[in-house]
Image 1: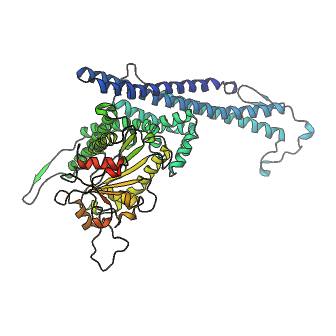
Image 2: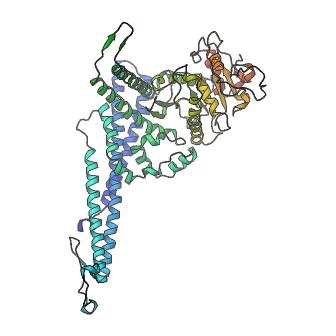
Length: 575
């Protein structure tokens, strides 16, 4: 009891503050390595020696990032322990003060002694067991209550101390630590292991869920710098997914999510390979095949390898900042759920004069992120040339679960309707972080079924964008450009001839287009798609030879998109 009474919690607070300062130093170190040292080195040096130097810098960056995460865990646990113990210390002191006010004596074990009760206040007949509980003097009742409160405070304090000590013991590392996949998997494991204690120390319920980007931004701005650091360290997957937060904050959070996710994928793949089922082939006169168990195993392995390939491509784009004239990359979203998702920006959209958001179509997923990111890297290069002295940001938004087959999935409108709210939320979050709708000129580019998703997001007056470009579109669920939020004069269509790109025709057959408001029900039930003159979009020239060639370097197709992205509408070459 005396130990709790005399406990100096200011020393615990001070230790937590020191760990917080450690976090700040480690975070600054990582930022300097990634955005200054590595980026500049890639710009000016190549060859074998450069590769070795960059590898060492990458390891240094990971060391900083690992130390930041683990320091955050320690700091939060210390804060939580101090806060919980402070409550029990306060309860104990309140009980002791009450005991003193009644002239009771409390020994070191918590036993409460009270002055003798006058004989005249003790009844001569205390009753029998059948009459109920024996009579107690109010002094006895008060003393027992104080003793119970003291015992409760000490018991809870002991439990708190034991619980936090157990959690802190889990946060250990080895001398000469070398960061590996297992290390990052351990970071995620540590976070889960201490989750109950950290939730008590840091209000998990206060993290916005289902809120608007403006509400998310207000919550973040209302936190102290120390609390922001703790949320980043303990809940990066939640913070990185919050639309409306600054891009640099989301990038910091999602880089941790990327590291831990890659490690978890590598561990799952290794474990799966250890347990490969026996592959048995059968050959009967009517069928040739293999056992279903092995087929399921192979499918799972292929999916994991695909996600790992996508995660590696995202990491490479982050690492390639400064090479080939590319700007810093910002990871605005990442997870491996379902098909896997990644949102990668070239340049900081928060400060961009022109922002382009690319929504890919059928077959897009995390596994194929490299190709989609390449398209936006090329568009950034072209757009930057056309807007000298201005900042441009091009974003690959693999933020929804796109259909993975032409038939039957790409004929289903539900994928577009499911993805539309996510796209609107992301775009709204961009505007919030940028400072409002007039802070940046924003263009949304939908390719193939991605344009259908853009159409679903732009049918109700809430698409936060200035222009829409529909590329190789199978339909946007409306019959005329004027039915989209940005207005017909700001809708642009780009489609190769039918012999090169049959997707628009397929969309007509699937019914992904729409009828104009003046459609006569007696007319043929043929829907309009953006490449149709009747749709009313600005039709741009293209030299693409197929459904995927609209971003070829040096092409008219890419150049036209860049003119729209930078707001140079008069430079666009018409079809």
